[in-house]
Image 1 (cartoon, helix red, strand yellow):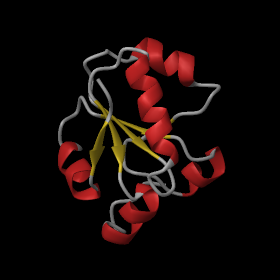
Image 2: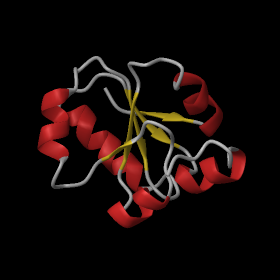
Image 3: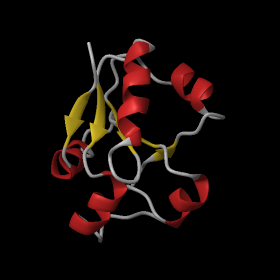
Image 4: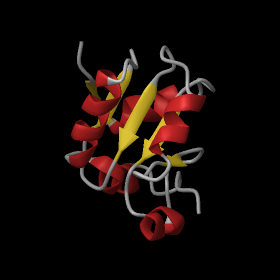
Length: 105
């Protein structure tokens, strides 16, 4: 099993599902400046806690700057047993371009 790629539009559509987790792996300062509404900041320091509190069948969408680093993080979560993991193509940069009004600060 491996992670799946997901577009910004499909990510936005899934946000209406309250069970979806957006895991933002960008650095803390950048995350604080703006992120997808409801996103959780995920870092090496918070990873263990994150994995303990999430269900293995919960959909998780990993977001980074451009959609590259998120692939490694998504793959790691799959290796840990999470069943529905996505890497958002284009990252937060693409989100900000397509949905500038949908940014939480």
